[in-house]
Amino acid sequence: MSNKIKKILEKKNKTKIVSLTAYSKSIAKILDIYCDIILVGDSMANVLYGLKNTHSITIENIIQNTLSVKKGIKQSLLVVDMPKGSYSNLKKAENNAKLIIKKTGCDAIKLESNNKNFKIIEKLVKRKIPVMGHIGFTPQFKKNFKIEGNTKDKAEELLKEALKIEKAGAFSIVLECISPSASKLITSKLRIPTIGIGSSSYCDGQILVTDDMLGLSGFYPKFVKKYVNLNRIIEKAVKKYTRDVKNKKFPSTINFLNDRK
Ligand code: KIV
Image (cartoon, rainbow, N blue to C red; front, side):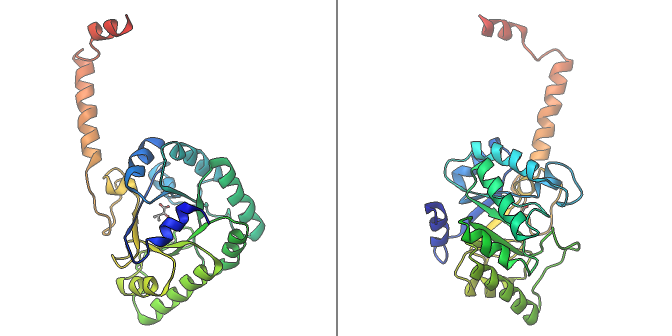
């Protein structure tokens, strides 16, 4: 196990794990100062490529954007999402996970659970590929968004799934849109850290899609806290630039000529 992953495991029950998504070097460089984990999420499908869902993002898209992110990272753990269909059987999962790691130099991969693919996690871990699991609302497998684990029985089902993922060897697990009581139960029963998104503060850490919390994506589910409205700030800057170009205030010919001397 790498030192970076050991450090993440050691945070359980001590200090909260901070995680965000990135798809480019410029954002990754800023996140790297603060984040324990940076995820190149398949959410890039919606956020970056304007697609309806995450289903058609390709390994090539994931690799390309991870190469950019990697350039901005010095200390955070870099985790990369395996796209839908890229781990549908043991052979495919192994080949594609190895390809992503070889081409990008990332630290770990994440795959969504369909409550069946535990053997795939086990095989990847046996091959020394660190795996982060993902349960609850898993957009690669579920169409309709809903908060999961609202009843005692449903919470127990989610706990069983999480325990199987832990047993298969995953080093951590994302809990997406799971009720506070179920998140609390799962987090207390697992030895590995839980990283929540829309799943209450009981989780060992939190992750958000960076573009959502920066007010860039235009997609703000209830659980997202918008820390800034970058859309408005960028629009103001572009408006000012447009005015300057039209009024011939930019560029300043004198400055430009001086720079070239
Ligand atoms: O793709 C993604 O950004 C994710 C996070 C929402 C956990 O899987």
